[in-house]
Every structure is written in C-alpha cells, then in structure tokens.
Length: 191
Image (tube, rainbow, N blue to C red; front, side, top):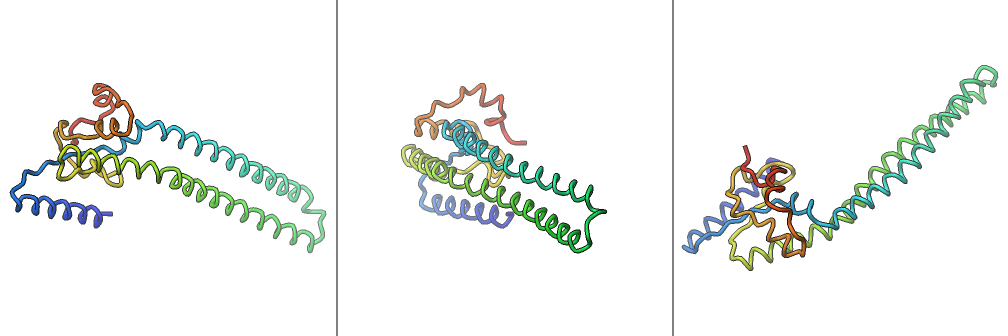
C-alpha cells in the first residue's frame, strides 16, 4: 500500500514538474470521494440491496446452524446407545456438516463482496467521469483525491480548491450545505 501511495505521489510530482517546465500556471484541486459517494442517492439503493442480500444469506446460515445443533444434540443424547460403526458414521456426518456450514459462511461473504463490487463499479465510473469533466471545464491541471485506501493523501488543502461540490452538481446532486459538511469534518484541515 505504501508503494502505491509513493508511486501516486511521484506521478503527481512529475506532472507538476512537467507543467511548471512549460511555464503554464498549475491549477490543483482536491476531491473528497467518500463525501461525494455519501451524497449520491444510488448509494442508498446499493446499501439497501446489500442489506437485503445479507439478510437472506444470514437466514440461510442460521437455519443450517440450527439444523446442525439439533443433529448434534440428538447425537449426544443417543450417543451411548448407538453401535460403534453408527456412532462413527454419525460423527463423520456431523463433522462434514460443520465444514459445509463454514464453507457456506465463506461463500456468503464472497458473494456479498462480489455484489458490492458489481453494484459500485458503475457508480465509481460515473464519479470518475464527473471529476474529469469538472477538471476540464474549470481548467484544473490535476485533481487529487483527499484519501486513497483510507489514508490521507492531502494533509492540508484550502477549502477553496475542493471540487467535491462541483462534482456533485455535475452529477445532478444537490450537495450538503457547507455547515453540515464542516460539522461532518469533511472540509476541515487534516491534523
């Protein structure tokens, strides 16, 4: 992750150096992608769909878990009266059912992650396109993301270069009023 951030910073430095070598003014902007995403109505739909899917998967897992518990309790209660081959066979079945349940949990998690990526891909694409359009329309040389992978990239930036609200407007979304944005800690300087 640190290599990616270092690479990203080096690319930015090279772009800025190249821009300065051409003596053209450099206009830099920042965008808070997390803030932009939080303002999009499509995100609420994604969250609702994922919550619904998670609920269905959880119900399925809980049903299998209850079934396994009942089988285990029945085995414990009858275990002393069972012949050794039957006892061993039942133990193997219970072990296999337990492993199947664990696999079902892993598969459910993978399914949720895949669904999240599938639903978010078009949103990320439209945000990227809106940032590009805002950059071109407003003459920005570069627009930096304020965070990459949850890590702050821009440690300080004057709020006047934050293009997040312009991006939202470009996407047809009315941004949160500045007071609410500041209260959420989005446009305050990083410490």
